[in-house]
Length: 261
Image: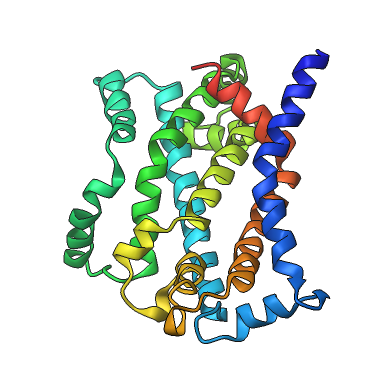
């Protein structure tokens, strides 16, 4: 037990050290410590502006909401109903994980153009939702399968339909799974770089990740590394806060969902 704790502490230090170093570098100035780097981050021409923050919030919100909606209904269907081709369809859904999404982004870019969603936050969110669904549906299917069927049967006897059972009874029971899916969807969409780079053309549609990366192409090649570290730290803060607040539900959802499969 003691050895496992030591190993866990060592791994935690190993993974947290780069973030801690970024936080330290973001407040380090030639005169000592201060917030000058964060001031340059939000005031320089290549820094983060309000629209970048808003765009990241919109994309993350749409991705989390869309992923939860589709994954909940899909997991409920796969976990509670029997229909022809159920296993084949589920395997086909999981097969998306084997496709490197970078290889089909150009095709998705063309498809979004046909749909009138090219260079839009909604189109970007739809792409991110699509690549979140295999893992999310897998998690939600296992979460629904872990619920005793007697709970659902008692609600059906009381006159509830399938949708009413889902909304009034089962959603509360699978809340840890919902938290896990939400957290993964948020972390992926908040820190995604490659998809916004390909799918967004207008600078006013850029997310914070693109804005931070653009700081590396400063005037005359002079990179403001302290401000860049401030951008990395600023983007990491919401992720850390969410993980700390939702840690207990996340662990419960991951254990009950992933290990059951």
